[in-house]
Length: 290
Ligand code: R1P
Ligand code: URA
Image (cartoon, rainbow, N blue to C red; front, side):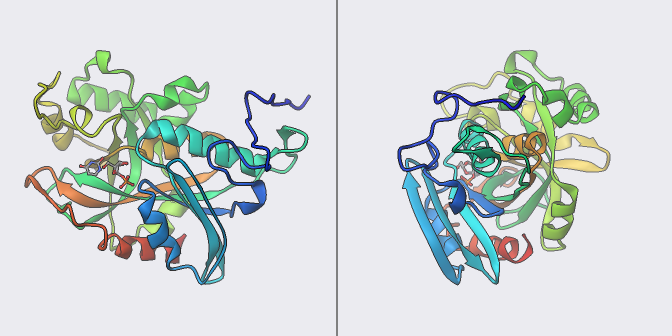
């Protein structure tokens, strides 16, 4: 018997839009670009030839329009995996739950989702300005651990090897390893992008090894992360959303990938605080290839 989702579990606003995103099912395209910064939505949608809808609520700004004949929705998620739980679940509900009957639709829709973000680079081949596509994403955030499919979505061999090589401190929680959609990765991540492993952190400072006034639990963790190698892959960058985007998408039957531009080079200890114009190069590549 199909499951009925009560009002408290699937909150629908009086105008028929979903609780946080304020989008109606009709306003969601099959191709979705996720960005962290609400200001980046305008940058992405400035490339659209036509705009059919624009919606704003809290940090979630959305524009649906057309780019070179492709219908797309660009949405800002704000910062962090906690917001990705909201965005992915609400996108999936918009796509796959009938808002009138409050039941799962007979025919499921699979979305193509690319996150275009910023990150910190961890390797000599990832200086500021580098575009990195995440082959895998290690989640320090713990979000996927709340879902029953967690072990299906995580690469358990990779997870074990990561914990072994960095001598993982169990008090931090259980990291999981999400894998990007292979076909999408092959289409989007061409020679102009470095392919690597991303770590998505539940914070910008301590979880990424940035020490200001508070000492770190493991001051050598970043050094071990930089040295880590498995199946020919190195850990290339830190950001804060990719693990949840890729992990939840896999469980829900969507195709997802994260591409980020490096704005802080942790090895050279350099940053580019004025990156907002240069990320347009990455935006255009993703719009052309999604
Ligand atoms: C931190 O400054 C934020 O920047 C990165 C991180 O993942 C985090 O959200 O991505 P965005 O530039 O997409 O927000
Ligand atoms: N975003 C992050 O999460 N970390 C960085 O170092 C830069 C951008």
